[in-house]
Length: 318
Ligand code: TXA
Ligand code: MG
Image (cartoon, rainbow, N blue to C red; front, side, top):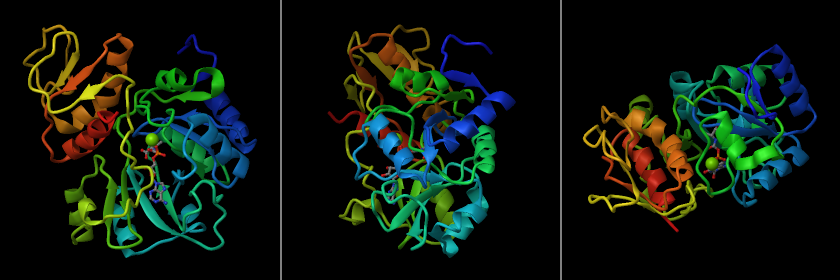
């Protein structure tokens, strides 16, 4: 489909070869994944990784996720273990990121992993990103394609909304199906979820046949990116709200207020997975409509609701 943005490209043979060339030359592209759109560049190249940090305005202490086509390619860079293999077999390619030990001779640029001895690896499922990953000889360092602390993008236009013409190539892969970032799990030690996602702790426990370390039990912040303020739409967000405050946008579950102005449902069926997939799209749309404040109802803290609560809690910090 034609669009009015010279930096958004439909996916076809021509744009694929353009993207491959672009990445091979060390440039950064906006690329679709099933979770959210990413800002991808050569993870082995210092200058590419540097460009990603600069574009996002991301603190150097916050490491990037490294995206691979498959396990074979990742083995050169990370040490794997039994827990990883179990989860990889069940969920990959898919919306889950593993923290693993970095190999001594790994080619991942130290800047990408914030000089840590560990690496975050992910095997995304979206057909477009897999086609690209298969055709290049390096993994992609790829954070969500938003300015640091903003809401993650879930369509090509969102990426342009964040970076305007500063990102010259954005591939349109449609709306991100999952709509919220991957689950991040640390497997270097006793397994611990660092960032909840739609693959929730129960699903993971079932596969590992073991408990997970509770995040509250570890005092140290193991994921540097889990800083409190994050995912902010740029206007105040209030959570656990019960009473609508006139002019603000009110986000809720169900269809009770379907015909009421200023009310927005995350899921008419009150389905938490659907709600998670609509969250960022809705936050961005509400901001664009010119509201000054967003109120959000209490979201049940189970399944995908845990990931929603994690994000809106951070979005509500000022
Ligand atoms: O769904 C996703 O994961 C998306 C798409 C584009 O793949 N990517 C994404 O990347 O959300 P980003 O950079 O926005 O979030 C990466 C998270 C951060 O919280 C970061 O701190 C954490 O992963 N992380 C990266 N490397 C780590 C490491 N070695 N140890 C602990 N946490 C790490
Ligand atoms: Mg992010």
